[in-house]
Image (cartoon, rainbow, N blue to C red; front, side, top):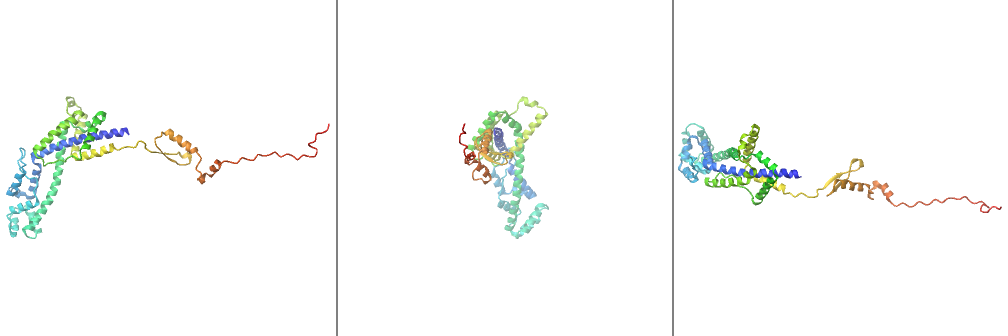
Length: 375
C-alpha cells in the first residue's frame, strides 16, 4: 500500500507541475495571439478563400472598416487591424452591396459579369437555389457563411494546438522543463514530493477551476499575467526541482541528449491538453489519495480440500496463525444439533446410560453343601 501511495504522490506532483507550465504556456500564446492578431488573420484567410478577387472590395467596405477600427487589433508586429468575427447578416449585407445589386434583376447580371472562377460558380449556384429575390439570395449567402465558418473554426483550433506545441517545446527548452527529469526528481526526494502534494491539495481546495486560454486578451493584460506566472513558476517549480540549465549539463553525451529531447517533447505535448484538463486530472488524483481506507479489511479463508468441506471465514484484525488456530478449534467442535447429516456425532455427544453391572450367577446349592463336614 505504501508503494502505491508513493507512486500516486509522484503522479500528483508531476501533474501539478504540468498544470503550472500549461498556464505559463497559455499566457505566452495569448501574448503571441495579441501581437500577431492570429484570429483576425485567420478570419481574413477564410474570407480570401470564400471571396477570392472580391476580398479587397469586401475588406475595404466602409461598414467592415468600422468594425475593424472598433476591434483595435493592430500592433507593432501585425499589419492588419481586423475584427475577429462578423455576423452572417453583416456578411450577406456587405456582399450584396459590393455586387451593387439593389434590384432582383441586377443580381444575376452582376454575377454574370464576374470574372470566371470559383466565386462566380458558387454565387450562380446560390442564386439558383434562392427564389430570385434579394432576401432569398442573402439567406443562401448566410447559410454558406455559417457552414464555412464552422469548419474554419475547427481548423483554427487545430492550428492553435500546433502553436501550443511549438510554444510549449520552446519554453520547455528555455526553462529546461524536462518531464523525465521532473519525474526522477520527485521519485528520489520524498520531502520534495510531499511539498508538491501539499501545494497541489491546497490549490485544489481553494480553486474551483482554472481559466482556459483566452486569445481575446489585450497585449497589456496578457503581458501582466505572464510576469506573475513566471514568478510563481520560478519560485514554486524551477528552484525546488533544480530545473534550468547549468554548465555541467552542456557536456552530456548522446544518450543524455536523446533522453533530454524526449522529455522536452513530452512537455510540449502535455501543454496542448490545456490547463483545465490537468486541473481536472489533479482533482481526481487528490480525491483518490484522500479516500479513507478501512483499518480492518475483511479477509476470506477457505479450508483446505483435505478437510472434505469448504468454509468461508470472515475475520477482522487477526493474524494468519490466529486464524488457523481459530479454525482448528472450530473444526474440532461438535456439529450443530440440527444437522441430520451428523446424527451419528450427535448421538455420540449425548449422555449415555450407564450399563447395568453384570451379576455373577451362582450355582444352586445342593442339599448339605453349606454344612460343615464332620470330622
